[in-house]
Length: 340
Image (cartoon, rainbow, N blue to C red):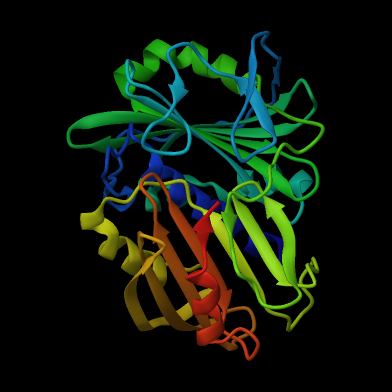
């Protein structure tokens, strides 16, 4: 179960992160990325990294703080940081996992050259690290070619306490990345968890069924259940709201929806039952219903999805269809979503 949950969450974040990076995409979808022809060198090493002195900032929506390199500022087209001078981007996510202390060892085994190649990335090297705070970390150095340009992408995965971990992605054209590689290395060494979570109250309002409450908040994701119970009891309904932190141009929304509806780990025989475009408080949106078979239990399930396309991100609302949370109730909740 642990492997299933963490694999699903991290691969989903990796896909979202790739399509958010302006260095790699600038309004291009991550599924278009092609791997380069370089050879793969997978070398796992243990080493110590220290904290670099400097002014710490806290990544919005997370309890991760770090020092931001020179020439980087908050991004204008996605939730992260960018350097226009170096055409580089930094994306920071706090991900929910069953056990943060087990995450790095599992991901070290999971992230093979073949798996990353399937995601459009070529693995150049892989390093396991130990931070000065005694957190385990995994650094994946990757390469990707697009439109005749070779890009470098580093994926830094940081162990967390409890049910969280950090994922930091840095991307830039290969030539530009070489100019800032030392700065990026120093930046990664400064990442640390705040002793107290800095997650603020939700930035949106949602009309929930009677007795439903926020059950858990994991940085960019909120989970709701009856009575706010967590873990969710077996057989009970729940609903998730995730800020995917990616920009999808209007002309690519349909292809994006089709890909997201049918790319689900641990489900087979996926089929779109219904998909309709709607408007939610002035924003273009889509509500989709997808049937499938859960591979672990072989039980049929209907997934209910809502995509709300804001100017600089996508809000993703999802829930299994149940007697308590049927199509009518799901649409009532989803269409009530609005910024505060």
